[in-house]
Length: 110
Image 1 (cartoon, rainbow, N blue to C red):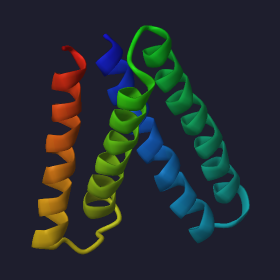
Image 2: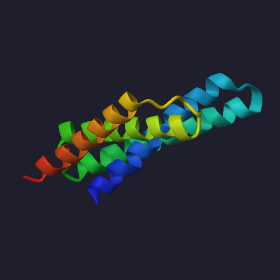
Image 3: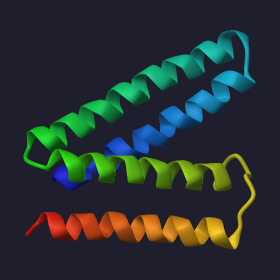
Image 4: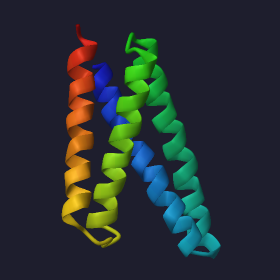
């Protein structure tokens, strides 16, 4: 269950990063909606991290997994939604990040 909280928290971390990119690209009412999205997503993201740590996940592992998942989701959103360029190296490093997250998950259970 704790890892599900971290996955959800990582997702909302990517949402708040995505919201930041939209805040700087919009104005008026739309900008304020993105600001609201940022505030809600950062709050949910931090709350999920807090709940996972409060339920027994080590801070060092929980924070690393939460941040790594946020980065992973943000990169994927950049590629799929914002049409950022994709390169072999970007995919390679994203895969090594995911492997590291899985590794941290495995060693934290010992």
